[in-house]
Each structure stands twice: as C-alpha cells, then as structure tokens.
Length: 155
Image (cartoon, rainbow, N blue to C red; front, side, top):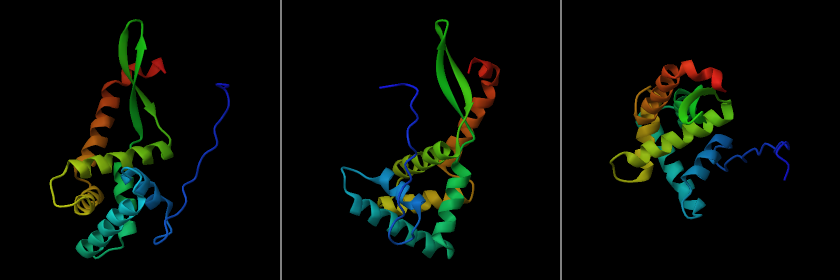
C-alpha cells in the first residue's frame, strides 16, 4: 500500500430524530459491544434531561458544549536524538471535534451518578457553562502546548 495515497473523508450519516451528524458521531463513540440501540437510548435520554433541566434546545447545548471543549492545539510526543519532546501541533476542526467528543464521554464515564444518560447530560451542561472535567482537559492540553512552544520548530 502506498504511503502517499490520500484517504477519502467519511461523512457520518445524520441520526433519525434530530437529523444531525454530530449526534450520530456521539452515538458511535458511546457504542459498547455493538449495541447501537442502547447507545441511541442513552443519548436521547440525556438530551431529554438537558431539555428538562435547562429549558433550552438540547442540540444548542450540545453544540455549545462541543465548541467549548474542542481544542485548537495538541501535543504530540516525538523522539529526537534519544530524548522525547512534546511538540505542539495545530489540529484540524474534524480532529478537534473528535477529541472533544472523546473527552466529553470519558468525563461523563468518570462522573459519579445513577446512569450514563444522567452523567452525560450533567457533563454536557457543565461544558456548555464552561466548567467540568472535559473543559479542564482542554485547558490542560493548551497549557501543555504553551509550555512546550519552544519545541514547535521540531515539526
């Protein structure tokens, strides 16, 4: 296989209720053991919780949360001359969105609470309000990139 070939970008299909690709991306990350219907149930219950708690459109809260968690830069470990450097790199919006979704879900899994839907709804609301575990993760990543800015020329 050639290293120079460019792969096609796969676009996610929209979900059946909200007709949004972002929700389908979230469902595919929640997915556990191939149980997609359970993942949809968890997400839709979380969206219902968000609507009940905030009295706003849950899709707006979701977009806001992902926007606040999406990082602009990331650090990548690179081995140069026997030592490993953390090199800051700018990332594309699609990769940033994927990271944000991953961080939101891992933060929701770490939370204490009854079920995954409630934990996810709380994490999304917190992220939309600019606090929470996932937002801290983004700030931590940005601080690490800022601290290692001297190594940016190693790209």
